[in-house]
Length: 238
Length: 292
Image (cartoon, rainbow over all chains, first blue to last red; front, side, top):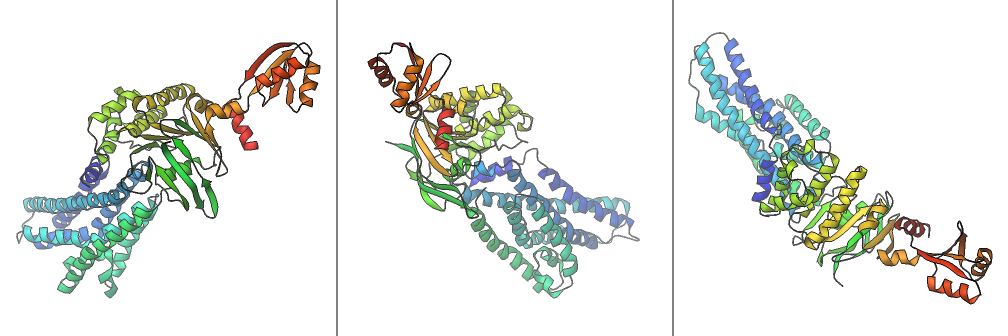
């Protein structure tokens, strides 16, 4: 299994994945800094980082997951390397899990970078504007990592779609629709169970919402992962 | 006899149409097996079944004595249709990916690059390679780990004449390097004829011929004769049931034994001036088999 994960990492050389890992969190940080700099009066850093976390959870995280899943899957679909990889004895059981693990690791890296860039952005804001509270780094980190856990189900569904279809269009449409529907479903009661909204529910003032998000995103993600592996291992490459 | 590949009643159906219909292949170990057929006959589908990329609807497949689908399957090197390499990685890096998946030492990469003569180009990205270089790199990848069975599906596709000659030399070298069994699937019959020891011919999803190449070509030998009276000789042989064609100054007797023809001509008082045996080409044997 280790060799499969290592080869997945090695395949990322000279790919756009690393650019995405930097661009996504940078986008979040830049927008938050600009909002803070344009605001009237002193800046509350509590609000500053929560705005960043909400923007990350609502928009950038789903889109980053969509883009990552498409990039990782198209790396094999494009040059049709499945014909070669799946002919290796034992590869079917390992390759899809390895891709999922790398995907989660990349999302974790991006999540960490979001936190780091928000912290850096706060320093920049403090140069130009008076600030009324300090940035609670521990709380920021905990929130972002809970969002990562809550995004588990969404990550698996995206990756599943990206690996199942040779074209990049279905997973892209799924990601766009998921993000779009989140806008409409955010205020609805049923929105509590919508995978694309799970990360945002970590910011909810209701502890039950956060608990549901972590359970469905985390455990639901594991169940979906098992189903994904069962399905993809049995698929034929034609 | 030890079989490198044995299939029994192998069948694959797509949307109600059999792409492979009860194909029973026997590929002896240590041979070069030419797997022939027109486009759409079922060659690639058969090879995909052998590699476990698709599942058969019926039949069994044994590779080097092991049933396909088990984790303990022996390593089979393969090039199916297109080279399928990562264009953003170098030649070396592409091979490194596979050798890690096969848990092989890094020295294997240098070994196979030497065989396909791609050492200088191995540090370039595959996206910059010509088609011939990609084909060679794909063969190098198939050679990693000294596979006992090597499958090359249309290895000369898209190559120019010089590339085809290079590929033929490479294909000849491969069994010599490690004693592997080689299955070459192609519709370039003249190329296969130069390297194969056995052939299997698939047509409209069915295996219609499978034999040693030597024996297949000797079955349809023609005898070219010249006598002192060609017209009389032609009448004589035709009356005895032989199919005779007139050439320029000689007669061509199809599907005949030279000894038998010579004996009949001489015993009927004709003077035999020339006798030679014409073996059909693989292409002729192929078309004859399909027509039959």
